[in-house]
Image 1 (tube, rainbow, N blue to C red):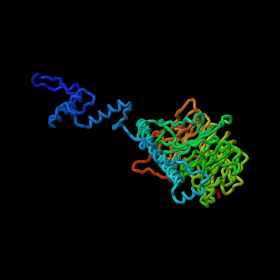
Image 2 (cartoon, rainbow, N blue to C red):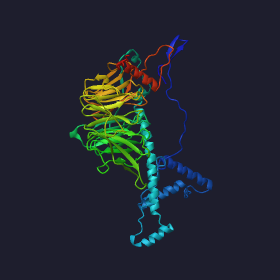
Image 3 (cartoon, one colour):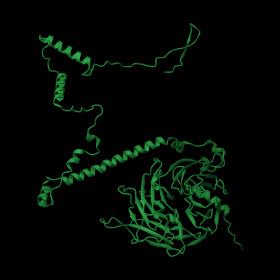
Length: 565
């Protein structure tokens, strides 16, 4: 209770402090237990013995009647005379027997440690098994199944508990992620990025982030490829899967025999992830296979593989036989198709031999498939050229764009507009193209080597790029066609390598050459919609995004020559 309470005294005509009792007694119970060796207990036993003797009409000096206390005392004196130890009494308030402390029943474990019959008595053993008298193998199998089920239940419960603890630890960040909107952004032209989480893994130290990919079905889950871009620092790699619900530790991790350079998560089957490695091999990892930390499928020299590092992989729709397939591009100049062929039930799955669709006289560095046209794709090269190819013409390319003067690091089709794609290079530039025109529509000089670019999922005119000087650049062409809305310095000593927009939430993730992945929230003015006239509804949907990009392109396209008579 507070100690500064005052009340008005009408007698003294003023406020007077009053004392408040800080203790309130709710329940009182006097105990009646006495220690058996105390003086009061001995007097009580003597008094009880005297009372019993008087009531029985006998003298007090006669033997006392047998009571539980007297019997316990006599047994104790007998043990002291014979030298026996006192039995250890069980603590009734803090006791749990061994069966409750073990995950499995110890009695069953002890019964399964019985040795099987000797090998010489094989016929007798067979008869015993037929008669059901020896069931050691069956018990062992049941015990193994129960252990696996129990461990899975404990693992799931521990995972949920770990997420709850982490959400309590990062509660302020979660509140910012969900609800924070800076009201000062309405009066600012430039946008900002709010730092949220930082993901790092101790087992992936000294590795660079070489690939990022969000899961299409679970927007809180993303994959991270770990490796190295330097030729002299090639050793191992790792594939990590993080969740925003638990930033402290990856949900899954797979160590690889070589550095991971690229990855892609299947859109319809989110448990499958394809990866390309520095040694030229490709692999498929299955998240449902929790029994091991190895790739479910791996290309070898027998099944065919690239001879140079694999820089990009992309899943495609299943073929006519419902087989999973994906494409890969490598520095050896080939674009290869890989198929998981279903064979006999005893063999499971096997790799099909890789099919080379395009073989170019250039080192290929990146590629991307069209979002609406299934057979059309773009391939970037180390010379700076971009090739437009088709699945229907495997021997040659359809067109070539003189895009950059250095290697094309990334090429990506627009999510909405069917004619627009974007490319970036180490020559400091980001370019936006119309694939029907040989020259770039927009060119942005970012004054540093560009590691990666990514289209925004909410707008056809918004995209982001990361550079090796540690900056994130966010553009929206419908608001400003000449410069970025946001140029934020993330780190001074690290090179940013990759960037990806979340498909649902207004956040982006970036990776650097130290193995760290950082998450940022976009300010409201980086994702605001264009203004409309009063009493007019804002158009939404893919058609509106296509029209918004088309208006920008129409300003840059040359008018068609008019026919003269």
